[in-house]
Length: 330
Image (tube, rainbow, N blue to C red):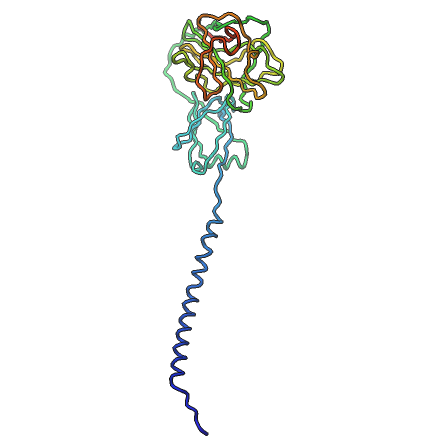
């Protein structure tokens, strides 16, 4: 039977082609997983990253022994240069940014040992209890034995200002409240109070209200030091905000003795009108025709505006009633 010879070039070409195809397939096979992995790894990593939002710590600073609130305690976030005060009831709120979670909260008050609290621990406690109490221990100081002869301190109240108790026999006493919702800055009007005797302890601020209007009036009281005969630096540790019921008129007295403020110089007493439904007008405050020689009236549209010294342009009269009650030691 005759044998058919296969040309020698056919096997050679087929083998080379097979080797080429085999190498190419191997390379594709080896590279393909990495290419797929690289194409999907980045989106997967990004999708798992969620931005952290600020947490909030709410608590009250209390006396460790009596369990009573400590008003106006100082609270510092160590290493973050942040410091603020608790309110008159010892309550405070702190927004905790992510970088503050490992920080230390330092709480201090006059007459107490300084307390340190880890922010991370407070966040965990608040999650479990929801009612944080930061207790400070009273400071125990050993004193040498001394003989003390006590002398009772007697104080004499003196009213200093303008048109004191004139115009109406109606008087109201309204205490500041830290639960009144914060409002945007409003119109401000005030008067210079000249202290003829110094120092003096501040007991209260009084002003004449012609009418609060059909809704309650919200007023913020502040005291300023003077510079160039204009309000300069705030003296109260926190502004005193009051709410006057609708249709009220007469003298409004706001007790401020809990601020424990001793005045060493003349001051400006300022009222900020925060009522959203009405503005400060010629019929808001109790006005008088006389103008004491040393009274200056200050006014500005808002906290962003400069102070003006008014003569009779705002209230269409010579002056308005405002005074302070001071305590002098006998």
